[in-house]
Image (cartoon, rainbow, N blue to C red; front, top):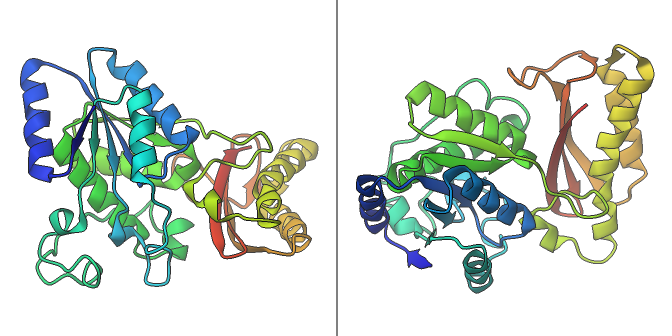
Length: 295
C-alpha cells in the first residue's frame, strides 16, 4: 500500500494507471474509519476487480464545516486508518493537506475566506433543503472537494454511503451536469447491532448518550410503522408530530430537522406513503447525527 500526500503526485500516479488501462476506484472519506467505510472499500473493489486500483482519500475538508461546527475536534487517527486500509487491500491512501488542496489560504484561519483560492463548485437545487438549509455552506464545500478529488484520482468508479443520502444525490447531479466520466455507486448504510448508523462522530457519544442515539433509528421505524398502518398515505405533518413526541422523551436529544421527500427530486411531500424517503438530523448532547431510510 502506498501513501500519497501531494495532489500533483496523486494525479501523476492516476495518469500512469490510466495509460496502463487499469480501472480506478475511489472512496472519499474524512478518516477515523469504521466498518461502514470499509464496506465502501469492498464495494468499489467488487466494481473494479482485483486488477484495479483502489484509492481511499482521507481528508477532513474544512470548507464543508460551518464556523461553529466541529472541524477542530473532528476525530482523527491516521495510524489506525492506514492499518485498516492495508488490511482491506487498498492500493493508495491519499492524505493531502489544506495548503495544497486550497492553495493561497492559511489552512487555520483563511479557508472559509481565502485570499487566492476563489473557485467553488455549487449545485443549486438538490442542495437547498435539509442539510443545505441547516448548514448553508456545507454542500459547496462537499462538491468542491469531490470535484477536486475526481480531477486528482481520475476514478472510473466512486462509492459513497447511503447514510449521507442527500450528499450522494448532490454528487450524482454534479457528475451528470458537469460530465465527469465517473460512475457513482451508493452503498447501503451499515448499522450497529442496535440500529445506530455507523459514523465517525459516534466517538463523541459517551456514557448515557450512546444508547440515546438509538432515537434516530427508532424514529425511522416509527415512520415506517405509521406509513404501513395508514394503508396508502398519511399526512407528513402527523408523522413529524409523532417523531417530535418520541424525541421529547429522550432527555439529551434535540431535533434539527425531519423531512419526508421524493427520493429523485428531494422535494418535500405532504403525504407519506410506501417509497417516500425520510431523513432527519438530531443533536444527541452536542453531537449532531443524521440518518435516513426509504419507507
